[in-house]
Image (tube, rainbow over all chains, first blue to last red; front, side):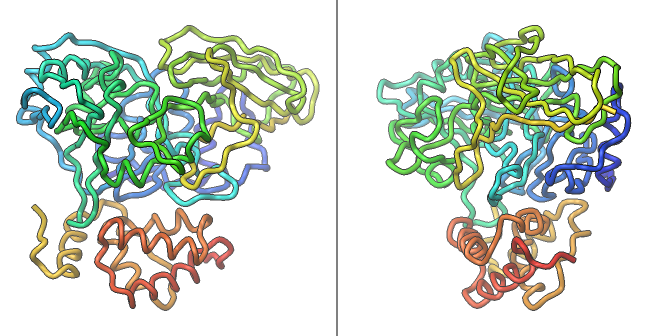
Length: 397
Length: 101
């Protein structure tokens, strides 16, 4: 393991490309933290949140490419017993009370037996930016990097389920992976999806990420890919798929990853819904500036572009707007090429650097379904769905 | 298969020793009454950096809730006496506004 403890100045140093002069003194509270950049085996140094189970987020500098590199992609686990799964002996078991048969597939069986499909999609942790909530909420204190964009390649879950046979009474599909708890009393990480989402043509059992076999820390040899839904459903090291006629009542469905009922837009998960809480489902419209951080100084008269990404649940991004007057007026940024409706969409905005002094830049994304980033966050106990309009304070000198 | 037949305390020590991830051995909790029992019990299942990470979000009520969750939902083998020592220690050393060292 490579360990590199770095002061924030050092981290910012990696961001000093192109238009940056030197970093201003007014770092925000979140940036004032001193992240540990540490490399897991086969990963480059990432921002370590916790060692065990391993939780590492992608530094901003590695979020600038259209597709996030496999060795920079964030890592998130709930349980610390994470076996290295041998792809040659790995088997996927498919069955359950509402399946007509029980079947078992090797990786080669899957690759040979079904149509191979690819989809570009962001993978975002439900709690991405939890550490930016005020007041603070417990949980892994992610900042902006529990997200990445990748091309996922595998087979449709639907095709595999149909081979096993789906009974008319099927209500949910339950997914388990090879990672397990350390203590007998700790609930295994098992998730379920509504049957209609499991049968959606975009839901995959993926074995490749950006054209390479899945990295161990991102779920090798195969993981679930649920474009548009938060990463809690993207079960890693997938081993068991069960089609069931009743609501699955495991801890990670009935007690965790829930939000207040009717508080957020997005697909409903009706079989798991209760009057007070309901499972988190789809990703909210959001954006991230990757070219600059708050406090950056810009050279007067030198052309400078603000760049970043906008994304949502797969409706697609309609527009990204920028305000330089505290939100009174908004002007459209230029959108980059569309990489697919589940992928993130790049945007570019030229910053006016003709006059010296403070520049406030706010960025707001709007989806094709008309949803817009939040001016004010909806508080929720677990700190999910942070999609506040981002405002950067820059200085032209 | 896990060693459920062993006495739980021993089992958790064995498991923790076998599963510590490189790097976490450098973490040292702040000095104070209850530090050792906190380190021993909590590290059965997770590295101790969780504690410092969430401290800005915590107070006594939040630590009580967190420790109860570890025992009731996650099956942590912690008796009531230790649970109360752990909550006292975490409240004293790792709450929002607690003195930083």
